Amino acid sequence: MMRSLGIVAALGVVVAGIVAFGLAPREVTQGNVQRIMYVHVPAIGVAYLAFILVFVASITYLWTRAPEADHIAHAATEVGVLFLGVNIATGAIWGKPTWGTWWTWDARLTSAAILFVVFVGYLLVRRMTDDHERGARFAAVVGIVGALNIPLVHFSVYWWRALHQPPTFLKPGPAAASASIGWSLLVCFAGLALLGAYFVTKRYAVLRAHQQASA
Amino acid sequence: MRFVRRTWAVVRKDVLIERRTKETVNAVVFFSVLLLFVFEFTLGADRERLAAVLPGLLWLAVLLAALLGLGRTFVLERENDCWEALLLTPGDKGAVYVGKLAGNGLLMALVETIVLLLFTLFLNVDVAGALPGLLLVLALGTVGIAAVGTLFGAMTAHVRARELLFPVLLLPALVPVLLAIVRSTEALLAGESLGTVDHWLKLLVAADVIYVVAGLLTFDVLLEG
Image (tube, rainbow over all chains, first blue to last red; front, top):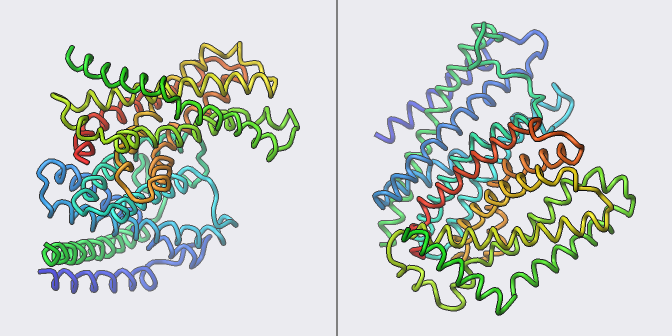
């Protein structure tokens, strides 16, 4: 099961690479730099999916105290932090030639950065708690508060300042990007989402084996 | 009714301990006075410049004092071996949370009063005109900071390197509250009415409700130790 998911994920990433570097059209104003978007945009999508999973799994863990739920939350946090890190890094690399700066305190950059530190905090709590079961409980609370905080962070930072080019997708009105770029992004999102799912299942298996070995 | 009585018992106990030892209050108040000096030394004595960043400084002082004070809320219970007693409290453990939250709110209110007085005195700013609105913002902000601080304080009392982990967890979680209070304080001190900052006030109310409810629901889990 996990092996087949791994193979599908590998295929998905290869297809995404072909689409991003080969099939997708060269963007008129930004040139090839725009191709970073095929990693940047899907990565934040996968990260958000992972954090939704953390939220649900954390609540399930506190409710049922099933170690499996905790393993899922733990694995999903690691994957979410990884993909969010990729998103922030690729954003900076794209921002340098396009905006002329690596970083700016724009609304969406800031909320991504805050989200990143919140969930790094989740991983730190686990690390710094000696008792494993206690660490799981504490981390679940951090995960729940962190996820509930996402909308608050979003609005507060948005009102604070909004400079980012407005979202290209998920907004009313005709799409700003051409259809072929949209389709390419969708393919890349599918590829990265499969990769993320594979990482989560793999980490889950390792965490469970670890727990069984130490029990 | 029982809930209120239990909450009151926790508040009374904490206030009594604090009144007799004066440990946290003395240290935190003195710390916030020191911060004023530090701000003065690092930013220079230029009044104009200080006045321009005043809302930020004001809240920075409150926040840093809160980091010190709130982190100690539950350390006291551990040091005095009272954790089991808290755990044995009959009924809803939410009462313990609200009691601790109220105690922390009182401590922060004290610090805020002193900081505000000192700032008006030393930096020569006139807050009298903006005071009613400012009090509302202070109250809403204090509830938010204390709600998350109390929750994470209960957690980090059990963690290695808690002095380190407490701010690392608390600061990012408080970004929305911090932005809201600093921006609205800024607007109010500039002489604008409460109506111009009502989106921030709504955000503060929403944040307070979310944090307190999340705290009430998850506190049991943390009290297990």
